[in-house]
Length: 323
Image 1 (spheres, rainbow, N blue to C red):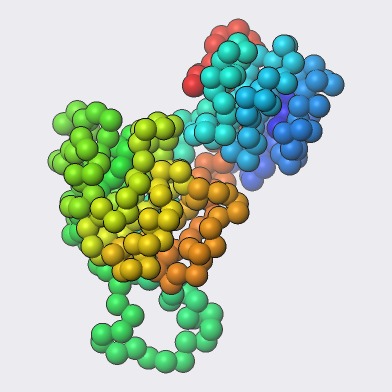
Image 2: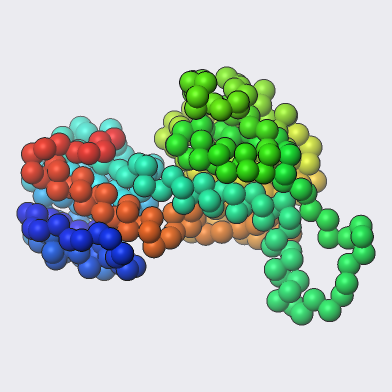
């Protein structure tokens, strides 16, 4: 997390290496805490000491109402490098007069790629296969052994048909998948591109053979939840790259153990990084540690977008991406 006083000359953004955002801070701003490892407590102390006018956070930093309330009055903007902002008490921040910004658009393709990876890996039992290879293999399989699910031609139900959901659908069409979706509102026909709309998520779940939830329309709506994994079609696969809180993990564990769900691919969890390790004990779960946006290109784009938001607010132009 950083504090800024003024903007200097913007850096070149093409072909920037990893950590380019941190490297550029001294070029654009009078910044502190450039290693990105500062705790919330340390950041609050630094903001107070250096009279910073902006604070940059990631999903690791929980800006509760109490933390927001301790920010000095000179702070103008609270910027997160993420598209989601569940880690920020937005009402508390706005009550303090803070402008809260996020980074939409820049991680759409990266997260959709990750959702496809999770779906393919879960369907083809990649976790079991990879573990077997690391153990030495040494045993051939018969025709009826180690069978996964074919993705091509299956029905894909998408919960949250925002930018990432639409990007996921585009990729799935390359596998000739039938696209179903549940969203707060129906898309225009040109955006649906033949997808079937369900106003009620509960009506969609029994018809889909794979159903990823994607950050976008589902990201910060507290009323929308994939609570009942048992409502899915028997033998379906669940993928979650959105929010761990969207899924009832106890119900998901039960559905995976009973065989009602064939498998799951999970990149997010209700408690991170201290996720429920019962998932790791199940062979039919493919797990990744919340790395949906973890590419050099996307993380740089997220960081630069956050810096642009801060610069815009501090210059008086207004935020580019205001929550």
